[in-house]
Length: 479
Image: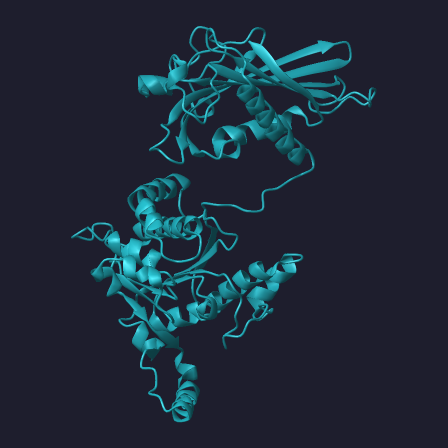
């Protein structure tokens, strides 16, 4: 074993434990090439796990039911006791470039006393299930094993995790990263940089635990992460390259293409939960059939194109036809319409303005402007309001009139007249949220405003933060 880096730390064992468990379950924190970790085995859920059995702590447990390549790799550490074992599979973002990697994670513990001082050591050991260096994926350090050692000194008269105060100039803890290199391999500069990055990440998150950091953004509240990311990967493989290479807008395809693919993946998985599968001929799940969708303010039409291509019936409209529409097949183009939706309450005033404009300009009235009754027929279609701007606040109202469920992903803040504004404390529900949230941003206020409108209309609302490349990533679901 080679100790690569060591640094002082001021966070106790409990904080280190929390950080390392979070990193084991969320490896994407330390590598942008990874999506997630799928957990195949956790000894905490195995009642037959016996850490005192040095020969085989998993002898009578769940491990025997796992495939051989998914069973934990046994390991020991001198003078340390095994406390927990987790087997995970690292899932890469791009499975065409990198393959998944199975890895065993062991957590060891050691306590020792010297007079009135207690020394507590925790070691987290990563063992990739790889025998040869050339089989190691790009996203993993090219080492056969790596370990993180946290050492914490405290007075024996205090509870574990309480720092020693008689030596204030000396940090009560240390953090060490160790590598076990493959045979005949040397420590490279790249491995040193990786070690530094890993140690910095652990130290940063440990300090966050020490100062009481609480995560504010919670993803995957409606759809499990695995299902969403698997569908996203499939859609990205199917449509990503074609749409990027045939991009005709002046905007960045890297943002728009993959953002709409991500939203499509979320919707597909959502509809799997609340409607009958489109390919199913019989309703064996007692779920209602898919009602079709309408993408209001569909913009470049990418989202509509992907959903139609996946077999979901629907259409989209926008006030202006986009150049992107021309790259789609004719059957897709026929479902994209240049229209303006005018809520019925404004229709009389709007027609009077149009007639006056026609008189002034000696032109025909634009016949692409329709009321919500005409555009949203037949009733019941699932309404998609993705950055629909002027129609965002109208979305729950239109869904109520249309007897539809909806999803709204707000972006720019417009009131019901279409004017730009900062969403006010318009309803009792919204006011309660604003009182509970100090210094609410304009965007969070807009989301609360749309949510409160939906609740006032009698919708059962849920919200989630989508995994999309945008800061405008909150969705409101109304059912």
